Image (cartoon, rainbow, N blue to C red):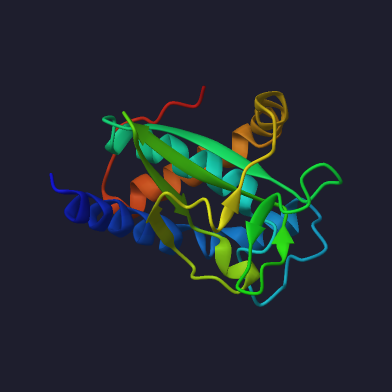
Length: 169
């Protein structure tokens, strides 16, 4: 599959993912007592479980890539860590990167919380995304949102008609 067609197919999948999850995010935030549950931007503060669920789905549907969650936040050592908005302001954020050989694809379904597009699929996203979170930190986050991720994958499966099981490891 040509690169443009592949990006388009991954993007179409991400659009389905986003549509399936938009109604879920506020409910999940209310149940977990999150202070931003009624924010008009449903994806605000939903990037961690969304990135893990998206990674599971993309690993299942596009196994030729190795998809993993990456992310970061501004720190003293890396002041531009995380997502860089249009003005170059960094925000703590998590997204997915798929690697196949030397090729990389960045996938994000919650960047609209920072003024970006709701779904962003791009090659070599180093100008927008600056990962600085360690694998240990990412794995800790994964264990905290495991049940939420399972629910989000199930929502995608129902909305897309895919009934195969995603890996939750």
